[in-house]
Image 1 (cartoon, rainbow, N blue to C red):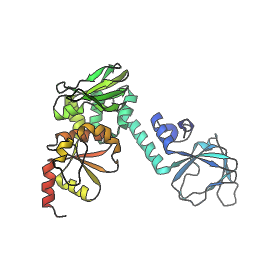
Image 2: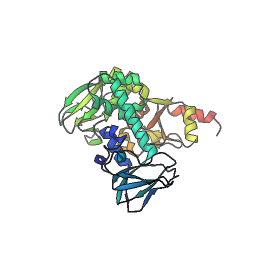
Image 3: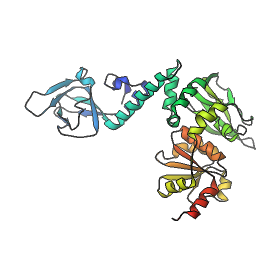
Image 4: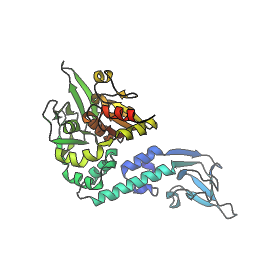
Length: 348
């Protein structure tokens, strides 16, 4: 559905451009022929309808003349007989076009967008578009509001040019975490033989640089800009306190066992493939950390992803990467040995 059709309708006219685009993706157009019913009095359906074109008669069924709603009129700016059960039957008097939405999904989108707008207004600063983008990033759903206030103040903008290298593979542990605000970049790793592997393409809203900060190790990949743009820089200290702590969640061995036995979780070993083949936990599957960004899109967003390695270091990085993508990711506290010990102590 074309999002340009929606701004004239209430309360869609209160939505941001991004939320309008999401609403358009949720909606569908329904054509009605003359005399065709859209819904009947007494229906308790889950849909919400707006009149895009034509004329609809709303009949209360009590002998009174029907209400005539014409596209483009003030009455047509509102949902058609929205109260449930329906108090009217809706009959097309001319060929009509209807915008149909799942009411619960639309209400959720509106609530989220308006809540975001209220939060943005409460924050200091004069850059609301950046704030909107940050708040809509799924990763920040788990960041306390007080942290968000601080983040808006502490992210520093850095203009970048196409071809510019922001992070060099092999550099000592860095001072910053980065979020791309404008432009695109790619993540490349060079192996010992000199071959380069493109690990990921990044765009607005994507972050990088967390691996070295979490592991306190040298940069393990190069990030170069594919276009002119703008990156936002967050110091290592602020990254640890404001982002890492709320996003890198842990699951105790007993919690992990409960989730796994309940069928609600997957166990992902993020070590190298050779290490995984030498032995891992029963039921786990292997996605090496270096490939996690490439494979993240294949993971089921409805499940909990329990990440495991030897000592929590790699799994903490993996949890942060997946959390940035809105996935429920948790580090197995204690690593590989902890879950095996808990399993041995707990009866099936």
